[in-house]
Image 1 (cartoon, rainbow, N blue to C red):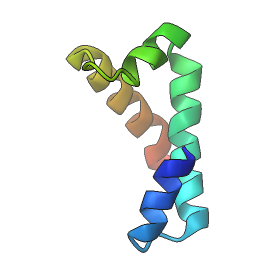
Image 2 (cartoon, rainbow, N blue to C red; image 1 turned 60 degrees about the horizontal axis):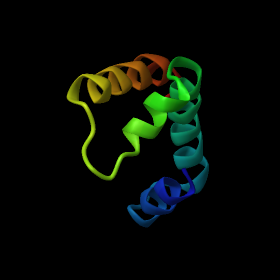
Image 3 (tube, rainbow, N blue to C red; image 1 turned 45 degrees about the horizontal axis):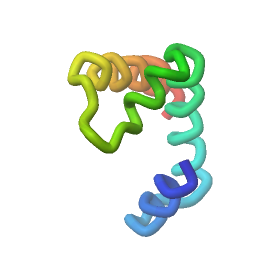
Image 4 (tube, one colour; image 1 turned 120 degrees about the vertical axis):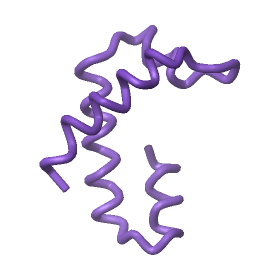
Length: 67
């Protein structure tokens, strides 16, 4: 998450906004995915497309109202 915030601030997003946005996404993933699924999402050898789509939808739904 820290790396995501650093990238966002380098792209002119203030640190507080970036932290809030990424923390929301991380919290949504932690609450809705197993440890194995989270490890799979961070895989270096490819991520299952259905799992990635589910993660994107989960984060969007959880965080869209908070922006």
